[in-house]
Image 1 (cartoon, one colour):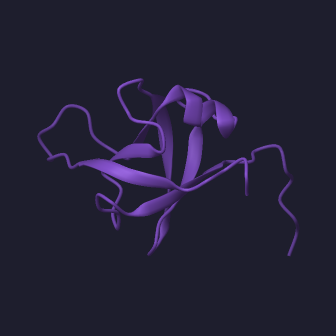
Image 2: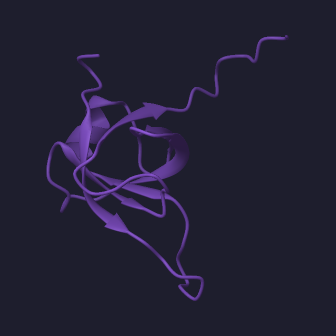
Image 3: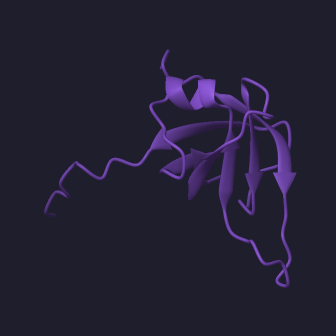
Length: 96
């Protein structure tokens, strides 16, 4: 996966019920997003060491290359390694 190297969680934002802005989010540097063909506000799968979740991406130039900041994604902590996989909405669902 040369085009999708792992990323390190460099920050975690946990929100409260009273917060106006809540929910899963991934903050990512534009160079890292471009390498993975991810656009601003696009949905991605966030694969961590224990589970995977869907979250939108927000481009943020203050995030260092090779790192991500996540908000409200359970099962992740700072310094853990994650992979971001773009959601493929073009592939048809196979009948079972």
